[in-house]
Length: 322
Ligand code: NAD
Image (cartoon, rainbow, N blue to C red; front, side):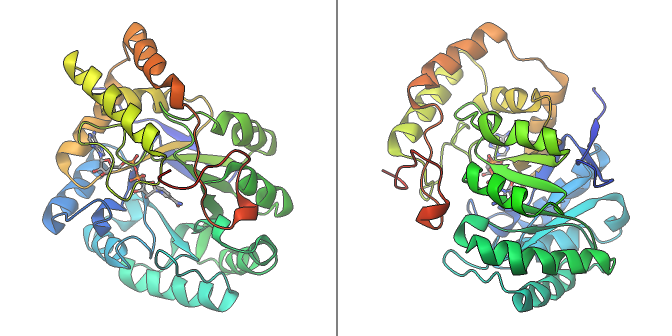
């Protein structure tokens, strides 16, 4: 069994396991999950060397944080705990400094802790960039300076917007991007990877399974990708199954081979899933097979959808689910 590896998150001083535990499924974002199974999954992940756990007030509207807080009782000092501010529901955003501080206090209570290792502004494309730069991020810096937070970052989907805000506000430690480096989309490397490298910023790659599109079960109904992307992913998953291969394993192997990303953040809720995703550390992809699957997905590669305010989107974004 291959031991877990750890990588620095930029210059933050945090060392993250190269596989991170995404706790949005614990908030039932992908369907009902069992609390006790979730707690077992968290404990098993820690036992196997995963030290990085990501949640948000938005995931299950507090449920993910509450459950993660329960699971981490007695384990808090073993993990790097990340949560977020700014997003509270599908259309409920508040990036004011006042709400940042209130949200932070609420998160501490739900997570049963007195500090957060990585505090992130959630989905910045839904905010006014001037407010994010001039008010939200300075509020996070204050929490860091007061010793309540160890590192700060921004998260979101459109890549150029993340880059623009990171360029304007140099005190962030890292950037979390989702669905932009996996078998369906590698545009992270066109925009953020060279930038993060140059600036020495940490880079977190979330949703290596493209929010379940790259699994046998397939994308949830709410998946925002264009329909042809979901259809192609389904065809690729079926092709893998015919060859007795698991597309999720291939997708994890692919994402984990990224040379710069500090951690690949995958959503999990069961011991079985933790086990399956850790198997990607022990095995190498069959390169011929990987090329075949990539060829299958090529017609929809790097298709990206609109998120947040129109002006914050990448060129070429199409409406959700179109
Ligand atoms: P993902 O691509 O990690 O897919 C997760 C889904 O796949 C879940 O339904 C999970 O049950 C399932 N799954 C996990 N392992 C599997 C396996 N081996 N086989 C089959 N199915 C498997 O998408 P995600 O959960 O959205 O992203 C990962 C984490 O990144 C989130 O939980 C969250 O913590 C973080 N994230 C943050 C942002 C943001 O800040 N804006 C956005 C997206 C994700």
